[in-house]
Length: 398
Image (cartoon, rainbow, N blue to C red; front, side, top):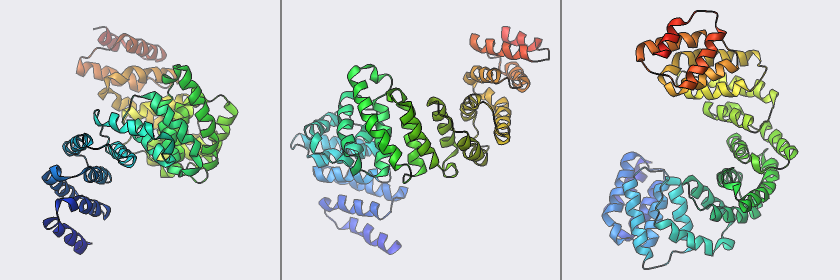
């Protein structure tokens, strides 16, 4: 690979400005994307920016989005150049889609450029390939684009071509639409109607592809469905789809944070699957749990889920003990979480002693004040305890 890299990089010395974008693209696609490599490419982009055409700047923006290069000064320079060029020539549909999707991958948005590009998209919406519509939707929702009406129109056209898109694209569409048809947005009658129409077509497609989709994409579908539960009118259809998805979610290949998110989605969906939780999810949580990822925030989320689980297996009880022990030691670094932790400890009727001792020590050292709701929860824990906590009560009052 080194001779290839040396040959390509030597070309930077001899090529004309018009050939630089193509060379940068070739280098990036060859995998030469170390920080030093990307710095060289950006220097060349700055050097010749005033000589690049619309095609060149569009290509450069796309190339830098492949390794997801974090250089917002460069992106601003490129999009400024694109805006100036659009004063002289109208963007094609191909360029408009490419620029939007590049910005989506880079998590970079230009409030002056996007309206110009989206006018092109609106004018050609029926002729855009479904995979490109999905990419546009995925990019715009990642960038928190606010024109919900346009996003809804794009989604309704995209859903007509579900058989044309890949499994990954289907998961992208699923996630994107869940950000469009939120509970808040569907207070609008037309959006609610559009959302129900879309989910009625999306649900059977998700179900039919669960066997061939990756565990991560199936997880993304579960996340999307939990966000769109208010649109689903048939509980039977939802359960059938979820049963199928969970057959093909292999927890061993998911991250620890993914597993907690999956459990949260199950609670949101009111979906129970004891076999999956006890035999697959809980053992994977125990296996992937480390000192680094067992943070107070994640453990509080996990505890909230476990509070809703009812009867636990032996491994579930072991996990619960770990979570409670960890929270009793770490929660004091996050004063805003104290109230929620005591609330769950009380709801689960867990032993309050470690938390009361920890709180007493925390208040003695920090001289912090608790809010009224937190004090109420702590007092409930004190009432359940068999020990005297006069000192703690005094610290809370003072």
